[in-house]
Amino acid sequence: GACRAAHRRGRGLLLGRRHLLDARHHAKQHGLAARAILRQCAGNDPARLRSLDLRFAAPVFPGETLRTEIWRDGGRVQFRARVLERDRVVLSHGVAQID
Image (cartoon, one colour):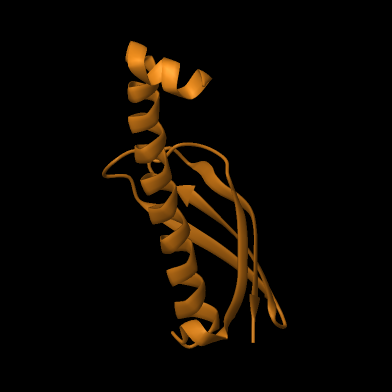
Protein backbone atom coordinates (compact mmCIF):
# COMPACT_ATOMS: atom_id res chain seq x y z
CA GLY A 1 0.00 0.00 0.00
CA ALA A 2 2.62 2.59 1.01
CA CYS A 3 4.67 2.10 -2.17
CA ARG A 4 1.64 2.57 -4.42
CA ALA A 5 0.63 5.69 -2.52
CA ALA A 6 4.11 7.17 -2.83
CA HIS A 7 4.11 6.47 -6.57
CA ARG A 8 0.77 8.21 -6.99
CA ARG A 9 2.12 11.32 -5.26
CA GLY A 10 5.11 11.29 -7.60
CA ARG A 11 7.85 11.05 -4.97
CA GLY A 12 8.15 7.28 -5.28
CA LEU A 13 8.57 7.50 -9.03
CA LEU A 14 11.63 9.71 -8.65
CA LEU A 15 13.04 7.43 -5.97
CA GLY A 16 12.26 4.44 -8.17
CA ARG A 17 14.18 5.92 -11.11
CA ARG A 18 17.13 6.78 -8.88
CA HIS A 19 17.09 3.26 -7.47
CA LEU A 20 17.05 1.83 -11.01
CA LEU A 21 19.99 4.03 -12.03
CA ASP A 22 21.91 3.08 -8.87
CA ALA A 23 21.25 -0.61 -9.59
CA ARG A 24 22.56 -0.26 -13.15
CA HIS A 25 25.59 1.69 -11.94
CA HIS A 26 26.35 -0.96 -9.30
CA ALA A 27 25.96 -3.72 -11.87
CA LYS A 28 28.57 -2.01 -14.07
CA GLN A 29 31.02 -1.65 -11.17
CA HIS A 30 30.43 -5.27 -10.18
CA GLY A 31 31.04 -6.35 -13.78
CA LEU A 32 34.25 -4.35 -14.08
CA ALA A 33 35.61 -5.94 -10.91
CA ALA A 34 34.64 -9.43 -12.12
CA ARG A 35 36.27 -8.77 -15.49
CA ALA A 36 39.54 -7.66 -13.86
CA ILE A 37 39.61 -10.76 -11.65
CA LEU A 38 38.87 -13.05 -14.59
CA ARG A 39 41.62 -11.43 -16.65
CA GLN A 40 44.26 -11.48 -13.89
CA CYS A 41 43.41 -14.67 -11.98
CA ALA A 42 41.31 -17.01 -14.11
CA GLY A 43 42.80 -16.91 -17.59
CA ASN A 44 39.71 -15.04 -18.87
CA ASP A 45 37.59 -18.16 -18.22
CA PRO A 46 34.26 -17.16 -16.61
CA ALA A 47 33.53 -20.81 -15.74
CA ARG A 48 36.32 -20.63 -13.14
CA LEU A 49 34.64 -17.83 -11.15
CA ARG A 50 32.63 -19.54 -8.40
CA SER A 51 31.61 -16.55 -6.29
CA LEU A 52 32.12 -12.81 -6.05
CA ASP A 53 31.20 -10.64 -3.07
CA LEU A 54 31.97 -6.96 -2.54
CA ARG A 55 30.86 -3.80 -0.77
CA PHE A 56 29.99 -0.60 -2.61
CA ALA A 57 31.94 1.92 -0.52
CA ALA A 58 31.56 5.18 -2.47
CA PRO A 59 30.03 6.46 -5.72
CA VAL A 60 31.82 6.44 -9.06
CA PHE A 61 31.14 9.34 -11.39
CA PRO A 62 31.11 9.22 -15.21
CA GLY A 63 34.56 9.52 -16.74
CA GLU A 64 36.46 8.37 -13.65
CA THR A 65 39.15 5.70 -13.90
CA LEU A 66 38.93 2.58 -11.74
CA ARG A 67 41.93 0.53 -10.70
CA THR A 68 41.23 -2.92 -9.26
CA GLU A 69 43.80 -4.03 -6.69
CA ILE A 70 43.97 -7.82 -6.31
CA TRP A 71 45.58 -10.11 -3.73
CA ARG A 72 45.52 -13.84 -4.41
CA ASP A 73 45.85 -16.71 -1.94
CA GLY A 74 45.30 -19.94 -3.87
CA GLY A 75 41.71 -20.00 -5.09
CA ARG A 76 40.68 -17.14 -2.82
CA VAL A 77 41.05 -13.66 -4.29
CA GLN A 78 40.65 -10.47 -2.29
CA PHE A 79 40.24 -7.16 -4.06
CA ARG A 80 39.19 -3.54 -3.92
CA ALA A 81 38.72 -0.86 -6.56
CA ARG A 82 39.92 2.69 -6.32
CA VAL A 83 39.02 5.81 -8.34
CA LEU A 84 42.36 7.19 -9.46
CA GLU A 85 41.23 10.79 -9.89
CA ARG A 86 40.11 11.06 -6.24
CA ASP A 87 42.32 8.31 -4.74
CA ARG A 88 39.17 6.91 -3.15
CA VAL A 89 38.26 3.25 -2.55
CA VAL A 90 34.85 2.68 -4.14
CA LEU A 91 34.60 -1.11 -3.95
CA SER A 92 35.89 -2.75 -0.79
CA HIS A 93 35.88 -6.04 1.10
CA GLY A 94 35.93 -7.88 -2.23
CA VAL A 95 36.31 -11.65 -2.14
CA ALA A 96 36.15 -14.01 -5.11
CA GLN A 97 36.53 -17.76 -5.29
CA ILE A 98 38.35 -19.09 -8.37
CA ASP A 99 38.74 -22.73 -9.43
